[in-house]
Length: 442
Image (cartoon, rainbow, N blue to C red):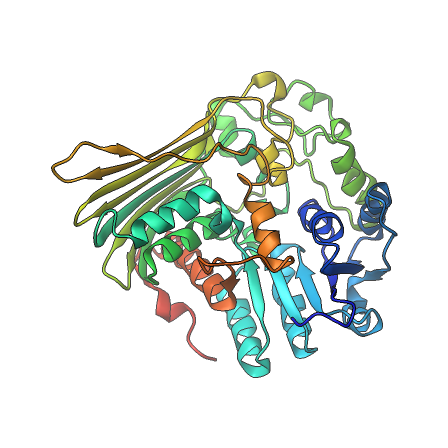
């Protein structure tokens, strides 16, 4: 987007939940010389009012607020250049498509959307309008992930034959997906879409390849009603005001988090949304233990496993090639303290707070016929997705250089999404799924 005469691009944010805060702060603090926040839109006025109060704390004037139904009117009245979409995942396409047809650019949170028809709708709108959609895959901007990209591109392991990728969400962070709207696959696409699209995008980016076929198995093993079998379930619907939740390590205490209280508990009267559901209450339609086998356009394969009930949090990536092997291990926290298990971990608020537990990172290249090489890594930043959020907003809002081509397009968003959608279909059918079959033209 070309800046206006004063050099600033005008942004509106649609969807004012917790994730919007990172973008808002970046716009009004970090990149105020190049950007201007001009409006909020949401289905809930109380949440917009909370963000406006926080703006005044930052020394910024409150901005006009609009009901979500007045989205198009807002674009014209506030002369919006770029729309930032941070609403519930299932609604992304509604705002993305409307903004494109209104001649605006779009930056949308991942996942781009939650199903194939909505994905097709966004891609068609991009083709019809020539508009631009950028998907906020912040994991691409983590310095560690950039380092892996460079090593692989430089041929550190030769031609890539296979990847193994294991991601572990601990019983604090993982549990949080089962308290909120993410527990409903219709609104989130499940963890294969909402969470794993980050990881699938990384593999696409690292390999410079596209997914061809996916076979997967997944189930709800720990949360939801299985929690009764394991002895964890308590009989309450939501934590606030429930005596049964008082000593439950899985209960989120909204009163202990002023920002969450203001965004959700104080806003309930408008839309009835409860942020602190019992993670073992009935009604969970997503999986918490998932295994994926994917084949790529280069012939490489990936085995991937996501566990949402681990005692520790982190991930392991192993890349096997014609000249050796790369191994990455990241421990984000090595345990969950029972006394703070019901709190919101930094990762569950997208890196806004630093966790107290220990962690560490190792990156190793193991060539054939030579000792392994430990690759020095930058000191790990314990907030903002390892520093990725600030680096991403620097590119998107500040015009910082992007030599690694990190800014993800709508096509990139679709490819990451389609791996997860193919996995979801394979869960249902028990059969391999060709990715191309999911997104045939209408």
